[in-house]
Every structure is written in structure tokens, then in C-alpha cells.
Length: 426
Image 1 (cartoon, rainbow, N blue to C red):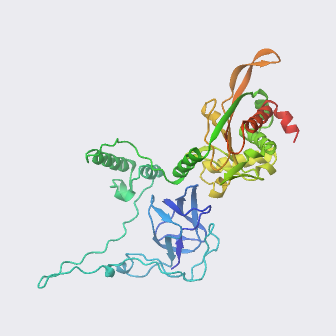
Image 2 (image 1 turned 30 degrees about the horizontal axis):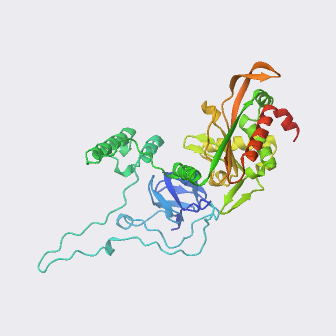
Image 3 (image 1 turned 90 degrees about the vertical axis):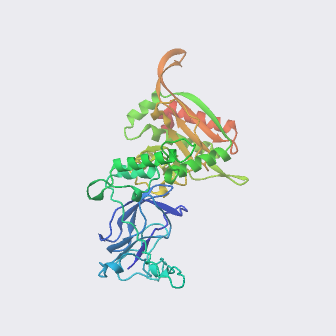
């Protein structure tokens, strides 16, 4: 029977964590049918199987990490062997005649070439216990078998267990037909906390959130940015009254899309900010791959619109909307969240005026916009109430000085204050 192995999910990723199985042992799968959800440091992706047949074995449980190349499942014809012969599934040496495709994900392809057999310990490989002369041999030690996959219906229950690092096979199920319920997970967490509190540990108790997957990747990138980039921050208050009017006149273009358009124009005039530091050199990049911060149920992600400098305002707005929707729905692949050269952030949606944002390493700068509120503002020497916001730029002081950063920020601010003029000049 053919073995389907965890494919290379792209961008140098070497492992993935099983989030949920989409098929069970005994299910019939067709070519390129999604069989498992896997979380990487970039995204949660559905992994399709390149074979057609019946699932004879699954390897790994939700919450377990597997290296790229590890066997995920075996697919073949329905087994006709006896129960004793099929207790322990073993990955096969080479595919049989099942149907398969050659295009699964980056770096993975099926072929007719044989693969080396993955050796699995068997009961026969366990040496017999030594006995003294005249002593009766003890009972044979039974070979441990792989426990059945825990029955979990609710994704909330699975997420609660995963966030607290609780293996589901250790949870006692009280639901019908052995289904693990939320109360079962909460009871297991309470028991673990109680056990930790009475074991002599002086550490504080509370909910533990593992820094892994997307959360771990973000944490590592932010720590690297703070450790390696000598950043500086400049900001300016801006009259955004006409900015809002332009948004109303262009219903298909969001405020973030308009700001992104002005950012791309600013990077053409001040290309030093569209760069990165590599060793002892500053590499000024020709292409603008614009990232933007998007809040999702899985946390903050930064989708990237590649070659943003080649897009019109409408095309850029469509790309941002599409990427944001895909990110919220968990459909954004790793390639769409890598390769950014500059990032914009609308933290005004959280009701704050400004933020000294952390640069998205290895980029050189990040531009943010705060909330837009009514403020007193001088217009032609007269005091008036205007819609005012704050623009903030954090930049890597190694790639440019304050004059360049200030010039870029002032250019974008002028575009926000006179958006129609800026767009008319395109």
C-alpha cells in the first residue's frame, strides 16, 4: 500500500503540527482530497492526499508535531488480513497500483521509485527476559499498541486542549460513545493544576499558552527585531478630513488600501526604506512587497501583496481585501505571508491614537495610522473641527537617517491631507 508523507510546505519549513484529521481509518479517499489540517509557523493548511484508496492507518494525533517526510497515513485496498495481523500498521516499502497525482504541495511528489522501508519495532524484536537456572520463565510481555484516536467533535474542545498543552489521549471521556467534552478537558486541566500545586513547586499557577506554530513564529520574529534592529520612531498629526471624503467617493477602496497606495508612492521617492540589512550591506530592493497587519482568530498575521508597485489603486485594494478575507478564514498559504519588504498597520481600529510598532524583521520600516477623531485644527488661520489622525513610522536607523524617514512620512501625510491631488498625479 502507498504511504503518504508530510510534504514540504514551503519557505524552509521543516515540521508541522497536526490540528485535525479530516478522514478516519477505513474511509475511502480520492486523489487530492484534503485528509488532515496541519499548522506550521506560517499558517494552518489542509493537506491533500495524492493517492486514491482506503485509509488503512494514520500516524500522529492532534497536537503532535511531525517532521517533513514523516508518514501521515497509508492508503490501499480494504484489508483482508486477520485482526492479529493488522493490529500494528507498518508503512509499506513502495506504492502498489493505487491511483495518485504528482502535485500535492511544494517539494512533494509521488513517483514509482521504491522508498526505503521505515522500520517499526515489533514484539519479536524485544529480547526475552533472562531467567535463573531452574526458574520458570515469566509471562510474555504484551506488545504495546497505538491507542485509538480520541473522539473529539467540538473544535473548541480541541483548541482548549492544544492551547494548554494537554494530550487528548490522556483525557477521560464522559460523553456518549466515548466523545471527549469540554468539561472533560477542564476537569483534566484542573487535576493537572492541583497536582502541580501539591508537588512542592513554588511556581505560579495559571493557564499556559505554548509558544509554537504561528504564535511561536511571531514571537521569535519580534524578539529578533528588537535584538538586531536599532529602530527610531517619528510621527505626525494629519488632517484626514479629505482622506475620509476620498474613501467615501471610492466605495471599493478601504482606508488601509488608500494608505497603502500612498505608501507605495512614498517608497518610490524614498527607496532606502524599502530595504534590508544583510551582513555589512544595505540591500535596497527594486520590488515593493507590501505587508499589512491583519487580526484573525489565530492571532496577528501579516499577509503580503507581492509586486504592489505594479498595481493600480483598485487592484491593490482588491488584493488587500482578498488577502485579509483569506487570512481570517485560515485559507492563506505560507507563500502569501512571506517575502514582505515594508509593512503598514491600521491600529486605529483598536481605538488608539499611536503606537511605536515593532518592525517586521528583516524589513527596514513599518508605517501605522491611528484612529481618526474630531479635533480642533487651524484652517486658513481659523479654528475649525477637523477629522485628525496620527501617522507613525518606525524605521531601521542603519538604512537611513532622520531626514529620509521624515521626508517619507511627510510625503505620505501630504497625500492623506490631499488624496485627490495625489491620486490625480498617477
